[in-house]
Length: 277
Image (cartoon, rainbow, N blue to C red; front, top):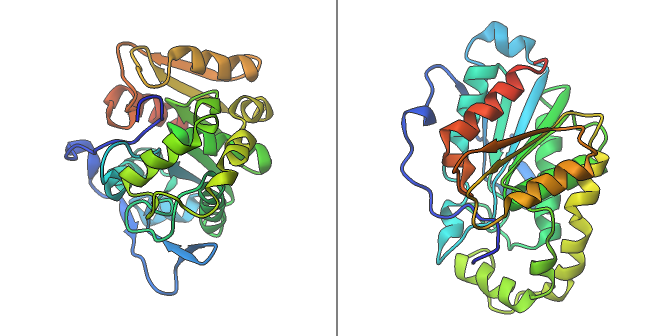
């Protein structure tokens, strides 16, 4: 799946994945994250102390990327609940991770528009808990975060990690993209219904135009200097689109999977901690 921002196989979680004290809200029938009739898998972490939970006014939605390789849709968001726990523990924010449709245990099938709908449903879900929602997306999830924030001026800020500035390589070769999504398990057939609409849906995400619409809201762009899937020039293009009104951080010698790079996670956490929670 070269050239496609990906989550890839998730390594075993380390000590950072289960911080002491983070409170996790359990999924219940009465508390469902529903997008277009699909009940999505979700995990909500809150600040560990009751006083901190009561004072929480800000929440973060974490958005995973595209899985890469055979059957990897099942684990696309596998370690994001641990990252949500870490965010809640270290910043006092509420943090929501979830599996986009077709990934993890979420039903349904991938399409670019469907995933954007899922993210907007997740924002609405978290907004019932907090007054301000922020977004942090990885890879393709970063493009969705940018687009969702461009469409919704109430989003407080956006972090885009290892995020492409241009999706034309996907829109120009949809049969290959469909084959990769099918191999990963995001779609159940080699000819999914509506695939002919994917090029227009990908163009509508418009990462550069979306990045341009974020400021003066806070925007963090994080990229690995050794990312072989999304070149560093994409991060610089996103920063240029925002006319420099962003925080651009380059992680030396880091690859594409910044979710599993502790330096990138530290940058994200530090950036959030400097914001009002």
